Image (cartoon, rainbow, N blue to C red):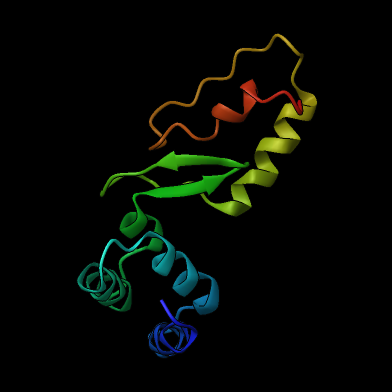
Length: 114
C-alpha cells in the first residue's frame, strides 16, 4: 500500500491517542489481507482494542506469542523481568508460568541466549 495511506492511518491512530502510531500503522498495513480488512483493524484500534488482540499475536523476547481475546497480553516491560530472572536461575531450572494468560513469561527459558 502506498506511503500516503500509511500517513493517513498513522494520523487516525495518533488522533485516537496511540502513542506508537507510526509503528502500529506499519504493523497493521503489513498484516492486512485487503483494504476492508485494514479498515476494520484500524477501526478496532481506534475504538481502543489492544493492538495485539487485533493482530492475534504479541512480540515478546524475540518470540511471536499468539493471543486470543481475554488473554493477558505479554508486555515489553515484562521482558526485563524475564531477563533478570533467567540470570538468577540455574541452567537446569524449571520455570512455570501459571494463570498468567499466554504463558509467555516461561517461554524464553528455552532460548539459547540464557
